[in-house]
Length: 53
Image (cartoon, rainbow, N blue to C red; front, side, top):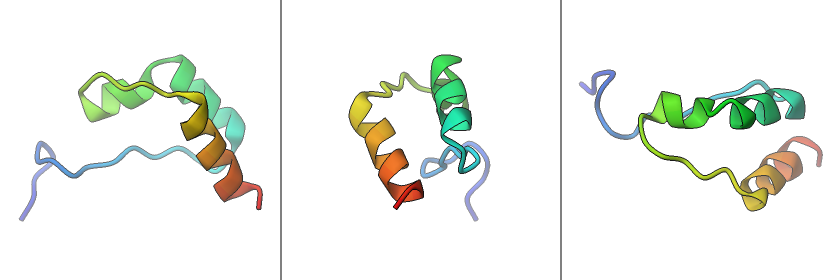
């Protein structure tokens, strides 16, 4: 059984683009994933495309 510190965990935001942007701006993805994370425009575009059509 995988524990909280095992690899394969993910990060979640609500489906609002504002939540995604706020998490990215505050460095929350890096904090949750415990490693350096680059949130580039392609990730934002994937999120936007997935939630808006």
